[in-house]
Length: 305
Length: 245
Image (cartoon, rainbow over all chains, first blue to last red; front, side, top):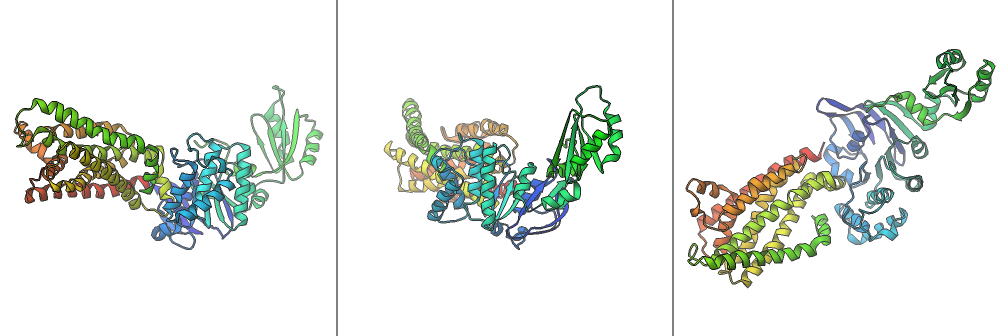
């Protein structure tokens, strides 16, 4: 998949503002970004459900503007909001969806059985969808996207609203699909998920790419190896004064209402220096830098909407 | 269309029952009950014979209209079924044609049941009545296509009650189903004649009673076909505008 200057406009509003990317076969590619960053618009263009306003896009080597239906026949789509039929049974949802791909009934039935096994929904096959839990519905949506045996899977926030058990089950399934060579494009708000699932990812903000790379590259480029978190619980502590004294200690630091974040390659050493300055925080925690640190640095801490 | 058939599997029992029950109730109450008060002949036939084909066309209108309102809105907003379809190789035209095909199939079912009941009531007087089946389907589609076009352009369902109040119900009452439109005040007659249901009713009646005038039948047919095609053309536009963004 190749995009050059990919742009999506809705009237005067520019949702996606000239992004470039390439995704190879079998790769897992993540799109991160705050709400309204343009992730879903990008996904809908890739899925050939939304026309490209400007720029070029090739999916599976084809042009979505002319071969949308052919491309869609080879991709599986998990939309952000479930579009299951609540009044049909679990199995019928898969049967109907498979028929949209013009697959023979027998083939769909075989695949549906495997997929329900795979997503651990087999015992609910003949139940209606409506009363199922959110996690089950999400798993069914994923099973449905796989009925056509796609080469490319497009997952828009696949685990939003799921409990940890369901998320881990899904991660496990997605990992197995990746091993089978299925290319995946994923958006998510969960940084641990991005770190787990994606070979490469892009952080989007305001319709553009703020950064792109593998999770470890991004951490190396935009954060330090470790983060020291200090808390001063004493309400009399003059945080500004403390902050001023810590300023020289590390390359970067952030003062949040409840704690101070010191970005350092060696957190323990920094903590020793903090103590040497005569400061005694109520708690100190040294942790590894995560994608979340990268994300917040690139997109800011303020709410977007 | 297959999707709608699947969904129908769930509700067919209730729906088949009403499909049988309504014609029986209507024909018994209006035709036999009310008709017994009408001593003379209406347009040269018994009131029951006059009424039955009109009811057939009116029912087709109601089915066509209903199936193109809430189900279309649901497929766009509530269940988002159309979007699920568009994530597959199906195109917007496939989605629209599929839905209208399903409505047509529903119309075939309802209209054939109606014809069976009508013959049980002894109101079928011509072999031409078999053509009332396609005409009933066409009458339903002449409403379904433009109403689906309208529904796809709506943000919520408030417009639908307007369609019922100012569209379907007045047409049901004043398009010649229950009495010949010559009974209407003079200025209302051209208006009644301009409505689509009038043409469906008149054509069905002429077929069932076996009084078909070729020119008139051709005009009725042309009107209904034109309305269906125009509705379809507009629907392709409103569907595309709504579903492909």
